[in-house]
Image (tube, rainbow, N blue to C red; front, side, top):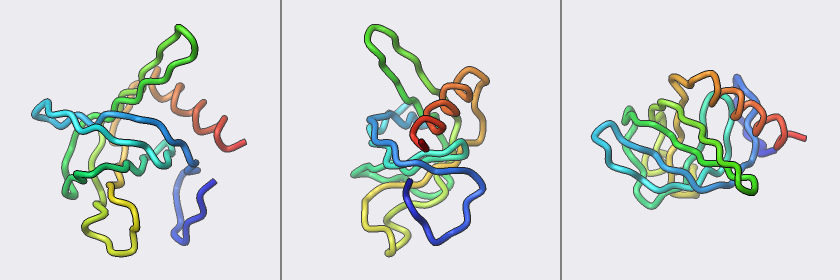
Length: 115
């Protein structure tokens, strides 16, 4: 698990996987998740969005032939360009809304990665 000096409401785990952040206008931003929790994630990207940008985080998980998607409506709360302490280019997103099926999948990912 990644160690941070700040207090977190939810367990955050290292989890590296490609993902899409789909803006409200339909534009897609390819990202890599660096770490994730039930409340949000840090997305590595060459083009971080400004704080308060909203969109949908789409994570596609594959296990053999089976494919599951996690969909969550998110808001950018911090961009690497806005914080000199962040060494990686990217953005922190907070989950605003997540459907029950996606929530269960995300919960299992976080639980498994925390072990």
